[in-house]
Image (cartoon, rainbow, N blue to C red):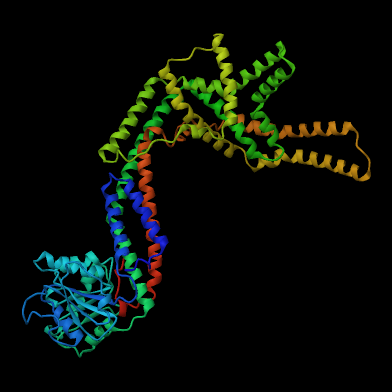
Length: 612
């Protein structure tokens, strides 16, 4: 494995995943993912880099499958690795056959107790690993350390042990991470008529493990018959020439397999299950929040108020929908009350106050409040402290869910509400004038006094959500009621009038005949009149009572209540982690597929059929 071989982009993605997983410190599955990825980075960092390292091929098998005999036969000599016929019934130490020129590049393995044997084939290190099914746990640990550094693993089986569970389990453990050759040894002990059935059974078991070995990576042979075609084919597969570029691709694929194994499905599926549970709880509690709103907005008094609020908000959004010249009167209609108030106040500031101006300013202020503020205030009176207590209970339920799942320390604080005020200065200015007028009316006893502080907090809690929901409902209403027909029909006459006046004006300038002042007054008057049909068409579409947005639409527009913000924050953190994980897996899969085109299975072994 080569740290330099893995691109900086991939390493940065891995480190980013580790950071995201570490933030979920109370989620065991996320910590498992982080530990795996940190281990991968450590292995890549401290692995033996460079193409000078020989290709490491490990013989993996159980006791008595003839693994050591195969090791000796491949190297053309007896006694290189003791066999069961000599001093012991099992392999206890690891025997490494390596060229003297490659010895200095062989990686160090702690606690492996390697016994080196020289051979004359540079570029390849053949390793006879301890038996996997040994009763000694130390032997299995040594074998796993050897497989860790292996480029290719050779699974050696025999007809009588082809169903060995411990061996198959070990193959399954490493199947995602390594390239494989498969050898069915001791075929000389099987009658000629039975060999096809034995081979078919062995291949079927490999297929169940996820391997398709019909690409020259399977060998049925006997270690005591080294002059057969199968044995020579196997020997050539192990010791054939491999280009530097191919070795680089082999180890890069191994590095990618390490990362993919760290993101194996068991961990990802566990995190996905947590996300689905959180989403289900969040949706349930969100519906309970909407039920609280529904109780209020379905009241008879609220219905009329909602229609008025949504209609006024629709006028504010309509100018951008209709466009052209028609947008001017529509925009003026949506700002008419506050524009009149601003005009009267401006006259009072420049020309001095008078009774008439004060009356006109009061009228415009009352109209503005009636169109936008008073309906909202009336609607908010329907929310009581009972609804507030119910919402607090829902918030506590959300906290208890996180506590039960061990995720109560993962959610962050809500965004600063002050940031939501950016870009809303125009609305704030209108609200200031409306609030002053409301205080004046309240001081004169025209409207009731401010309610207790508990209910004030309740109304404040709901008002922002109501306003956001009203904007959504009004936008939907404008989108469905105003279309291309309104734009074309409403702008056609103004365009013709404007075009005719412009033509007359330009023609007069060209001919040197200046048009009289009455022409300009008439042109402006006719132009304004030409806007009336389009304005009436828009007004009729927005003010008719049919097809008004249902109150359920307003309730459904409340998508992210603050009561479930903790659940939502944790869920989004999990979704972000899962999305980053899937994105990294997709990149690795694409790059691995490209590299595999350079690696012939008959010389580099096969990979598992499905790695996701």
